[in-house]
Length: 469
Ligand code: ADP
Ligand code: ASP
Ligand code: MG
Image 1 (cartoon, rainbow, N blue to C red):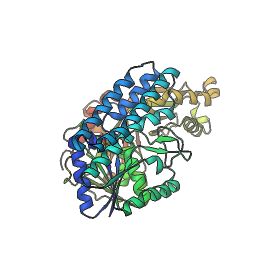
Image 2 (tube, helix red, strand yellow):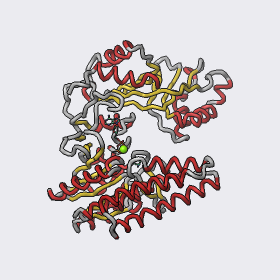
Image 3 (cartoon, rainbow, N blue to C red):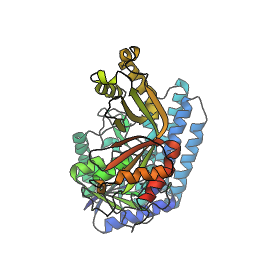
Image 4 (cartoon, rainbow, N blue to C red):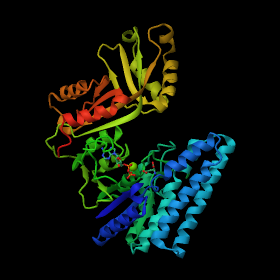
């Protein structure tokens, strides 16, 4: 079988983790599988790179050099442990150092210009994966698993949306097959940079934070892989974020529909778009724990057996703003909803949830707070005449809100789920600001104040007895 395995930041971020990576890949090879490895940057590296770039823009001259030293140190330690003082290690470090030089000179340029473009940010953000790849490939090869580093910019072709690029399927399939098939035929394990791709013109893009998951499923689809295994630091997708609810526990099976709701609404364990390539072709995806490789983790396929639970999992996405378009003339103005969302679309903002009461007096929707100023400006421009005539009020936004998504295919057609849900929140005196239920009935989304988020998740988790296996 052909398996694409993705190892996340913590899974390649320490000597202990990298030892596990070697064992996992070797075992799969010994069992006769063809393996493509996709790797993230060592944990913390992407943040160091991006922070330094932002600081350089803000006038800070020294952060880049400090970040460089920290990153170099991490790689120097890992390579020393696995490769010793050998020419092999020298060669890996000789690949990494020029990338760090590039990082420093880019930050210098940003500092001088006082400007950081999305295009430069993608080049800088992607450097961590480009340093991780030669390191992992050398460690695997040294352990007897022949491996070769491959730049995803040679495989994944994307549009030009820097920071959240979207793959172009046909071009990617063709390049990925041409790039990886020959290596697989020779029994070599390709080790590919996660997170990045390139436009048709060859300009580096990134797939969004946490994007290495997406890289793995894009490559899996392009190669018609049998399965994609996402190796991370927990035993699969859990009933909720284990950092918020320590009683959360792994869910054995999920459907594509369920995981796509969870990841869209912020379950960090999988990038929000990553399931899409797999879903298109029915390719199974597993979420597995690098540090406990024998645990079965979560298997994601088209169908998931109903596990006797109505609600299976809860996700929460923070840093959101609720925008309201309302006014006395709302009912009389044709096409207000259409014009509202067209104006929002022009700002390229992701709308997470929409809710309109049937009285039609108002429409409200949720966008990331980072985008809310642009959204309000666009709406006020679009609706300027109606606002001047007082048919509509000024557009309002409530910041510091959270969307909670309560997910499970067992909720479909089950009466009383929302009753229990709102009862549980009521008992905790949590005020619900807005509600939406998708027609799929896999998901009920609720907007609440950010300060209530953790207690709301705990209350719902308890109400639906998610702590019980
Ligand atoms: P990686 O570096 O392997 O991609 P991430 O940090 O991106 O790992 O994602 C894994 C983390 O996601 C877990 O350590 C956990 O803290 C967090 N997380 C949030 N929600 C969930 C969930 N529902 N199930 C599992 N993990 C979750
Ligand atoms: N290293 C990138 C990030 O931190 C991509 C990833 O880890 O998936 O966002
Ligand atoms: Mg991740």
